[in-house]
Structure formats: C-alpha cells, structure tokens
Length: 94
Ligand SMILES: [Zn+2]
Image (cartoon, rainbow, N blue to C red):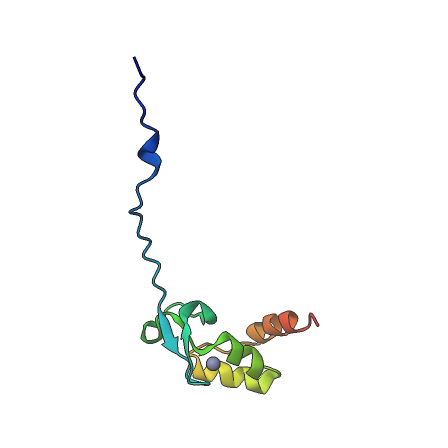
C-alpha cells in the first residue's frame, strides 16, 4: 500500500502579490517617480503623505540654511532650527 502524499501542496502558483507602488510627479524636476523616492511627510494628504519634491531634488537643493528653509516652504514642513541641525548632521558625513 502506498502512503498518502500531500507534498504537492506547496505549489499553488496563485499568489498574486499586489505591490503596485504609488507614483507621483515631483514638483521640482517634473519627473514621475515612485512614492518611495519621496521623503515621508505625514499629514500631507494632498501629496499622499510625502514631500512634493523627490529625494534627489531635496538632497540636491538643500545645501545651506536658506535653501533648506525654501525646501520647507515648498514641502509643507515646519521650519525649525532643530530641523536644520538634524539635516546638517546628516550632510556632514562626507
Ligand atoms: Zn525631483
């Protein structure tokens, strides 16, 4: 007598992963990009809770206090000196 074989259970072939990522157009460079290429901006519904500028534009733009302030203005962020210090610490790695 052969034993019952349930080994084939592993193959279902029907696992559709719906990882369709949102994308939006960067306000600055006007390129459509995946949402993961934007910094999170919680509470900004109009921009799907992300910045209006893509990460590339943000890091390319924010080189000093004035440009960082401008970034905050365009991306619905509250300006604070603390925010500036944090960003500067990150930028100081080079
Ligand atoms: Zn951009």
